Amino acid sequence: ISRERMRNFCIIAHIDHGKSTLADRFIQKAKVIDSRKFKDQFLDSMDIERERGITIKSQAITIPYQSRDGQIYELNLVDTPGHVDFSYEVSRAISACEGALLLIDASQGVEAQTFANMYMAVELDLEIIPVVNKIDLPSANIEMVKHQIDHDLGLDPDTAVLVSAKTGEGVDELLERLVELIPPPDGSEDEPLKALIFDSHYDPYRGVVVHLRLYDGIMKRGDEIKLMNNGAVYGIEEVGMFRGDLLPTESLRAGEVGYMIAGIKTISDITVGDTVTHPERPCSVARHGFKEVKPVVFSSIYPIDSDDYELLLSALDKLKLNDASLVYEKDSSAALGFGFRCGFLGLLHLEVIQERLEREFGLSVVFTSPSVRYRVTMKSGERFFLDNPLSFPDQVKIETIEEPYIHATIITPSDYLGPIMNLCLEKRGVQQSMTYLDEKRVEMVYEMPLAEVLYEFYDRLKSVSRGYASFDYELSDLKVTDLVRLDILVNGEIVDALSQLVFRENAAYRARIICKKLREEIPRQQFKIPIQGSVGSTIIARETISALRKDVTAKCYGGDISRKRKLLEKQKEGKKRMKMVGSVEVPQSAFLSVLKSE
Ligand code: GDP
Ligand code: MG
Image (cartoon, rainbow, N blue to C red; front, side):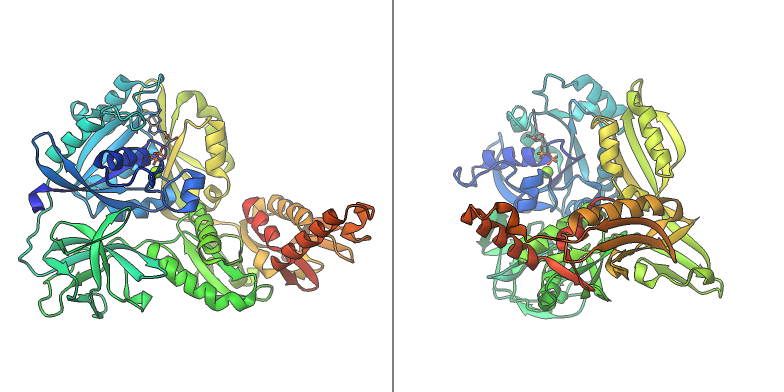
């Protein structure tokens, strides 16, 4: 297909406004997926995505479309995630496109991520088509949303297309509009090859699959290609496009989005944002890469079974291919042995990595309490960044510690102003501004410590606003804080993996929660186990697990043998997920629940 009839576009929106559902309708209209293979939210192919009903990875699919003028177009559509943690996925996906469909839920209207995603698209100069979705809902308020498109987003409300991704209403019209309004890619097939790596994944059978957007030139099987970043040269084994599965094609051409398999064994050769070219006829300048992502939450990962260390390393390497935002380095702990210190874009990102390690690689792992990155200035004048509680220096030698703040934007119906302001206050937020977007909706801007937002802020915001408030943030600067290291002692021994950096005023409360959780999670053993929280040498919380007296099966009164066996098996299963801390067996679930309770 000629370049004039290619259209590369993404679907962007606030979470739950219907991006993945709209992608479904496009895919079904194109009839490229066997109806028996089709399932709702088709592009959300990871188990975690389907279970949680959210998109985590951007996914591309190429579909043919015959427009009303009879021409066949090649549509490259990219579905993107909506959650703040994954905005990096969105920014990469967007940069492979010329246009964006900006979806707005007709009953919810413009929300915080609507703005954030639109700004990203504007920055990259994409053609933006506003789309009002869910017009089938009785609560749909199309006039209100059109007003918001004009007034809040500054887009022309007359260009908005009205659709229901659920019923399919308006989807034909939308397809026509997008081939008409979104420009074809520029570039030339005659120029030297210039292809941008925007993603990749690891396939156990095929190895590394590199996701590319071609700007100039042609690439085909048998070609030698060079990675501009490190000069590595590989021979292409296969190119093709995304069709739900991988669909091999003769070649990939300027303007197209597709994949390449080239027997790449060294996973670290592939970096997202790198340019691929031909070694004998290289392109002059590498494409702009991507903004480097800065992880904001840090935690250490340890394998439950220390023999799994190498496996964990190779799993992280493979995940990194598919998730460029993941960073990690070696780490070790007295309680948990060798592991990795990892950086994440947020807590949801951390949870996703944890689940992927378990599901995709069959690993049992423990994560330590997540921390933000602090800046420490010592009395000696020395200055460094600190995210690992284990590196917390001697308190008396510290001059100041600063913690990262965010610039948070909250959009809410005015009915929930009071409870939201209380919540922000409790989270040490300082209000910067409050603006009425219209009679009913308010936008508030807060400066808040990032560390406070990590813990349950999002859930509480949703609950105090009955789901109506939306939230977006960006990092602002560092402000002086009063930080201490909270240690947790099990049977008198500090469990270093449970130590954490906390704001002094929160320490006692946090310690009580953790001790209580541990008491619930650590099974009783032959001896009494004290669980304590301390700051320096001061004990600030305490719980006790009483000693075990009887065998677990004793309460079965000898009767039901199968029930007894079940109990024993369950116990054995549990043991696999135990970590020895001194002489105490601590289940993985204890570490996890401590992490969750925050
Ligand atoms: P995403 O987070 O933007 O990808 O949103 P999803 O596509 O996962 O949709 C979120 C929820 O909205 C799902 O329960 C969908 O079934 C529902 N939904 C999506 N589009 C429509 C629509 O046009 N009408 C109605 N009534 N529900 C929709
Ligand atoms: Mg989605």
